[in-house]
Length: 115
Length: 116
Image (cartoon, rainbow over all chains, first blue to last red; front, side):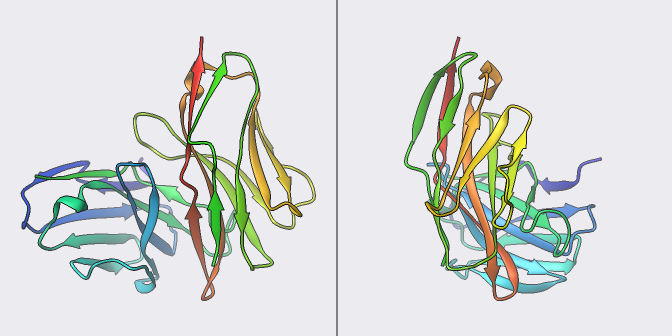
């Protein structure tokens, strides 16, 4: 039973297209995140939601739009894809006041390739 | 603002030897957490070890130990008795409060290669 699951795992698409990545967690956590890992392996936070409310919004182009329909799901929609969007996108979750403060539980990552 | 620095882009270690991966941090938060994650070539992020800023003792998890020196703002990972399966990217990370919520910032990572 996967704790944090992302779909799809691999996504290959053309420049200019719109695509979505979905994330679901069954850990009962109240906070979910999107991280981007670029070709140099640098992990950078993009967004964070707590109980469906956006709480962290780093400097990300507005072509990226996260949506959290409930606290177990966090989706990422990307409009007008560019070559520089090629990366691995990680979903993660955590829970306030539980366990190690800030410990992240990661999904397996979604590798996006823009041609 | 919090910052994590890993100055070793790559490291080699002989199998069965110990290795230390460096990590320094900067934060103005009095309360924070320090983590190490492993990312093998398969890509998943694996939690290794955690140290809270108020913990008096250094954290240990099996062959992993965290050398926490608060005054120096360093949180080095020590892997004892290296194994071939330890070859991976290792990330140091720090959690701190951001508007009442936890924000986790990662270092740039160290690629460790274990030599038979």
